[in-house]
Image 1 (tube, rainbow over the protein chains, first blue to last red):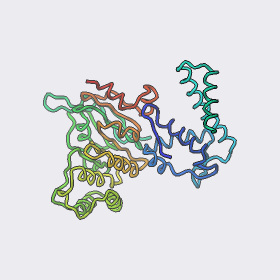
Image 2: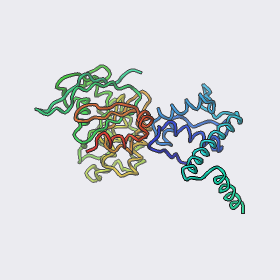
Image 3: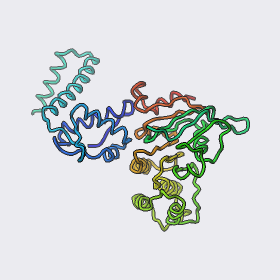
Image 4: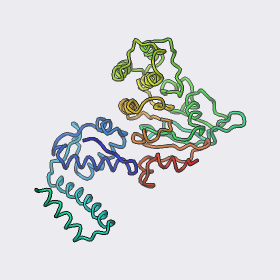
Length: 123
Length: 232
């Protein structure tokens, strides 16, 4: 997955988000080793200091941990990954709900459109 | 972190024209800094002062505690805005010349980058296009393991694909305790790799901030902020 960075928000927070997505979707498997800061920075074409900042915050949050001798790893705590997934999903949905609200749709109408679309997608 | 470059009330005049007015700066190690400003704002003058190509009219500029001169040239790698390479020389001869001049020059690095950009070392410079010449020059400058890199318009003359490669080269070769100062007006191309920016306007520093602070506080990119600050 390519790194898609927008120009109007801080870069580190976008890096955090994208790494979270990679962890949740299993691209970075639980317990696996993360590439080095330098490799990640080069891959995302960002400053290594910025990548470092993003990784330290993810570490504080517990999604990553550092093994002093062998580098940075993804947490093995699948419950925590599940929570992160939940958080990301909630963020996306509340953004979506805001948009529906601005279109003038109420909760029932929004829900009925979703249900219809899900039904159709099944067919 | 210790500072690598400091300016105290640095001013430079050319006759009646004041190119830089009372610049006070403290630049730390381990940063990538964008020196941004419109044409004629004093960017190149500042970089030339750092390289002892110009002398300050008043005030002081120090790099690692030294006034620009022999000692600072050992640790500063400078990419001028104009090419100074000799047209009749081969690329390999230029590499040799850099190796002779600079103790911190890494020959393998240079050849490695030339190969990745498909530039033949046996080619004479006069047969290369303008953009390719610029690439050669940047390769030479980035192949030094310097403390401070001063890049004056490094991506001006090259195509967008090569620009990406050049930024990649800059990122890949930079050591954690070295600082890079890049002067440019192509802000949107480089803002992803910058830590901090310095805005120059009419010879004065109007803003120094980190890129993330700017995005946080203004909700816009450095590029948009630049367009706002320097609106004509």
